[in-house]
Each structure stands twice: as structure tokens, then as C-alpha cells.
Image (cartoon, rainbow, N blue to C red; front, side, top):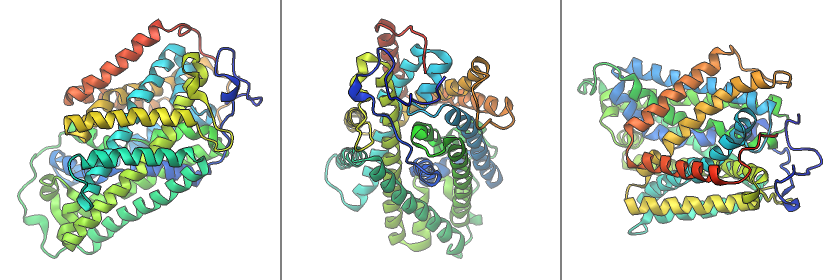
Length: 460
């Protein structure tokens, strides 16, 4: 069996037409993949979620342990994806693994979720974050946040259509700015804290840790590293570059997250963190005054921009792979030979994300609506992707595996059980947005059942 697209670039029978057969070319080095992973994961979460973690952690020690545990769980999941991506390098990422492990039906449903819910919802969410903070710098009037969100989606889609080289260098620059901003927060919090000690503040809101809620908020902040799988077909030496990029990216992110939380604690204390609705802005305001708060608004806007660009770049790869395998969606499989990008997939993705921006603008709570919309579907397919590792080890034992997940089967089991818990929690703790996401997934299930050819066994 081939681990990637056939060298001849001829499509399998019944797949995309000849003009869609231009395949991805390896152009991404380890550092490029690391920039994607770091850029996606270090979004706006680290500037807001720590206050929620502090409110439910019980003590500073529990809070710091939670951030360490979140990093270790993420690394466990990343090692599972490193084995899958290096064994089966493919632009479809999870879609390709699910298709090989469980067949065409489940892969179809996942591709539908990727097209309509998971990354498109995340792109709209990140657009709203950018819009919220950009509006603090230059307000455009009523609907300012949604206007900014729509403009960002169109602009970054155009950048990524212009070529992988353009998209990756844009990502590298934005990631450097983003990481530099986090380092600035760490330096200010640890080195330039005001002399007044936060220890005199009242006790935290909870005396004991609520680990369920704490883990939900922490893992939300670590989310997004799995997007590296979608550029595995474009990675140079994927058997080495992907495991290295995933491990070192998450090790760096874990370190930055822990240092950032130490900085928040040093300036605000746990009670101050728990009582803050914008912990990074409050820390900078206390340390540097109002100019510090304006600076953090700019930083968060850049972080949202960075994550949005990386998500747009990676998410369209699943849609492209889906189009190759599904005749009814073959238009999505056009790969531009000169720009080396899935042009139609990118535009369709942008159109759906813009529709979700309109939905968020209508509800007047764009960020919250998009979180609820994406979370249950995201964690459901994380469970299934983790299970695919077990299935493919048993189903295809003779396929060469350049990288094997350490401590198998314990490592993937921890990842699957954690993801299952977060799927349950996302349904229990979210509202109407979650029901909307599940409803859209159900529509995809109906379409899957009535479409011809969905019962065929999967072929790589």
C-alpha cells in the first residue's frame, strides 16, 4: 500500500477529474511546521483562560500542576499523531487515518465536520477575537468586530491562495511576533511587577480544585496542535520532521504557558487572576499602566491573526483530500500547480466561515457561540482519531512505521480517555451553540447515508 498519493498522480477510479490530480509537494521544514503548531496553539486562550483556571484550581500549586498536566496530555496526543502522520503522510490528516481505519462512511462524516463545523468555526471564532481587540484600537462603529472578522478571513484566505511559500512565511513572521509578545508578558510579570504584594488579596473563589472544569479550560488553551497532520504530505522528511516538530512545539508551549501563569501570579495573585475578565490586560495595566493594557490588546489581536492564518492554511487540506475521494465534491480537489494550494477548498472554507461570522453577529455573542458550536464535534473526532491508531496497528501490522508512539498502548489510551471526558464535558457545560454544531453534523450523517457510493471500503 502507498503511504501517500501515487507517484504518477493518477487518481483512483471514480475520484477527482484529471485537472485535480496535481499533488502537494514537500516544502515545509521542521521549523516551518513548528511555526504552524505554535501559531495555532498560542492563540488568545493564554490571555484569558488562566483567570478561569485560577478561579477553580483551589491553590497556586494546583493551578501550576494543571498547566503541566495539560502539556503532558497534549504531548501524549501529539505522539499518537506523530506515528499516524509519519506512517501515512497525506494532505487529509485525520480524514485519511479514519478512512483507512473505519472506512469511507466515517471519513465522509469527518470531512463534513471539517468543512462545516470544526476549523470553519475556529476561523470565525479567531476572527471575532481579532475584531474584539482591534475594535479597542480603532472602532468601526456598530458591528465593528464582525467587520474585522470578515475582513481577516478574506485577506488571509487570499494570502494562502497566493501560494504555500507566501502562507508559510506569513505564518513564520506572525508566530515570531506572537511568541515575542508572550515573552514580553513573562518578562514584565516576573521582572517589573509592582512592589505591592498580591498576597494580601482575599482568598480564591474555591478552596479545593474542581479538576473537571480546570482541565476543560486548560485543554482548550492547548488545542490546535493536531493541525500539523494536515501538512504531512508537504513536510520534508515527515518521518523525522513531524515527531520532532510536534514534540518540541508542545514542550516550548508548555514552558511558555507555565511561565506566563507565574507572571500573572506574581503581579495579581490567584485571587486577582480569578476575579479578572482579562487577566493579561489587568496584569499589564497594573505593571505598566494604561499603555500596557493597549499593548496587550494589540498583542492579542496579533495572536488571533496568527492562529487564524495557520488554521486557514491547514484546514483546507482535508477538504481537498475529501474532494479527491468523493465524486460529488470533486470540485474541491483542484490543486493549483503553480501556487501549490487547494484553491477551491480555500474559497469554500472562507465562504462557510463568513456565514458563521454572520451567525455570530446576529447572536451578538460571536466568540461564545463559536466555542459552543465547535467543541463537542472537535472532541468526538479526537476520540475516533486516537482509536484509529489502535485499529491501524492491528489492521495493517506490516506497514513500516518510521516513528512509534512511546509506551504503547498506555500513551494513546490516556489520550483517548481524556478526549472522551472532554467530549462529555463540552456537551454538559455548553448551550445552544453545541446543539447547532451537533445538528449540522447530523445533517452530514443524513447526506452520507443517502449519497451513492458511501458504503465502499476505503482505499488509500
